[in-house]
Image 1 (cartoon, rainbow over the protein chains, first blue to last red):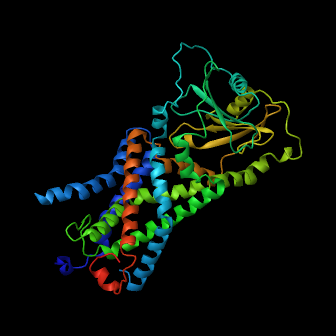
Image 2: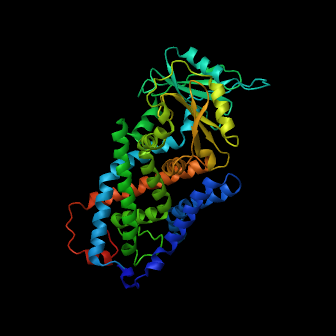
Length: 68
Length: 379
């Protein structure tokens, strides 16, 4: 059954909140890593890695969690 | 929210911009993957030339001694460029060819910067990495190949932007990151495509856009020659090219005195694209993470070893030099390289799922876009 048909439509701001946040953080990381060569570079690398972590979470971990 | 007709327009744009470039983008992602690790793979294949551990005190070898050593190793060849790798500060590499305008038949001589000993001659223009590099840069087709791939990259940028616009109507009823696994392959594939595409948005857009800029690099350098170099070397316009060359060491010292706060980046020998027939193009660079990528050309008269001109790079070459690390992912150590590789693989998944979405439904007539959108289904 198509249950989500009865869900209310999400607003644009709801749809794009997380994608935009991830995009801004990872873009900042890409630029910061270029500007800094010290410890801040690690922070930048972490920011660039956020899309990877989010992808791993929803793709592999989420189904494992819901199955339990 | 978008109207039905504008959704249809964006969907058309997304479909065709991606369909045209997908095969090439898959090729670029696959060939780009080993290129991220070209240093490590070079070491592994045994192409890396080691710097010997020797007790050395006193000054480094003079540039003239280095050049003479390279010339005696490759008699009959002319030097093109002299540069060094960031991780091998005690080596200089001199690239050579039969003529300064040669397009193939290059040689590389690696020299010890302390003793001017020839350390090795790693192969160029052959091997697995060379094939990967050429497929990635110009499909073995020179400038037209580069520009063609640049155009494909531009289509990818359009596909990414239109994909972001289309993300909204498909996500009206879905939570962020929701992948419908129980409702058939098609919806699962659609959700994976949308989800992985949107989380890697910034990276994909940056790598695509900087790749497009890089595709223009040869033309940008040509324009720089026309725009700036021709002004700098105007007094030499009708002179015959020099037959005897002044000391390279003296020329480098002139450049160093001209830019005392910078250090030597690379040298372009007379007649190459970054110099003039009458000059050594001596490119000085800064020290900070950004300025070490930005070169300042110092043109030194190759006959007299005196300064001719020195100018900052124009904005378009600054843009090119800044865009390169953002494309290569070589600016943040090993961690960043691995992130680049994983994001590259995710992009392959996005491209592949997108292609499959189109392939599986190419024969289906889609009668009612409205109900498809309401159901958050692909069409």
